[in-house]
Length: 418
Image (cartoon, rainbow, N blue to C red; front, side):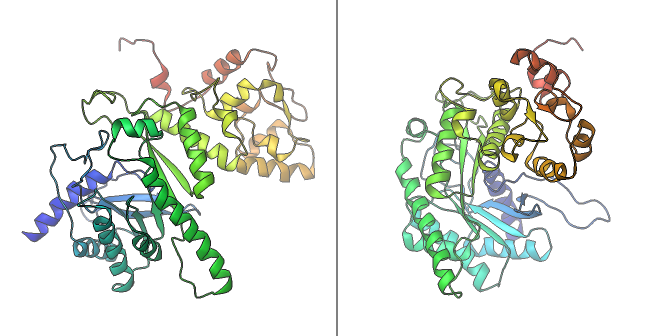
């Protein structure tokens, strides 16, 4: 009977946690087969470490009871849904049991707010503390930080968790006021600021005293819901840029709004989830962090939204054709990495390979570069760019015609009979 109740809680609270994408994970419905070993069951998701390893996490809420009534949240106070709450010991036992069965390598724990921020945060911290101290658990732990919780609790959380995160929820302050009037942005900034300073202070102390305990060694991150409050991509990227700069975030995650109610302030039920927009924002985020682009090169007052039919680097290149062609055998790395179709790894291979001789198109293809995009933007030995004098729209048409994208059906507006 007790096991059935735990199973029911797990199904409810794992389902409620699926809206949180900030562990870069996806749900899994993989089932065990006859003669097989293991069953992911409810609440198991996957995340990727910096070195590319895929690790499984138990991803759940402590509770979906909540004192807030945020219009975009499935756990909002006024929503008529099944409610549940784990005890501290139940989460600890689940984590250890799943870990011993080799189902998971870590825990991603978030929560609705019961009573107040401290009451909820205290329980999240206690779970991490029990896992670390009583069970000597050395797996990954990601805890959500509850805005309004005391500094003492945040400090304790950082000593036991690998990563902490505070959800911004809505990208703009006006959108937050509209959809979650009981919350305000300052309450989210305060814990982020505290965590940033503690992470910096701990790193500095560790240089002097090696025994200084680690504090949130995987840093802090945040998440924004996109498509719920009418914000432009420029607004979203501006907010992300601000938090990367001011709070030293490791990652900003984007979650396309999934319609959950007929609230007039939100896209109605049946509206499409903006998955392509979500993907374009992640691509833009990558360009800012690893390709040397500035935010206003990708989105600005003139181009406030990202193109959905092409990736943001190609969009930038088509708006700046005067910067092409790039001579692959002479240009600096910083220019090569901006060529559509050439990634960071390929750009480094080009710079390394050209030391041994002039590169030709066939050499680039051996490196793994597709000629479809790059042939409009580069020159190399024996090759001059095709149709570089044509209008940007025409080049875009040629590239799209030769592309294979999983989103192609979305862009096809032509009606079909069969």
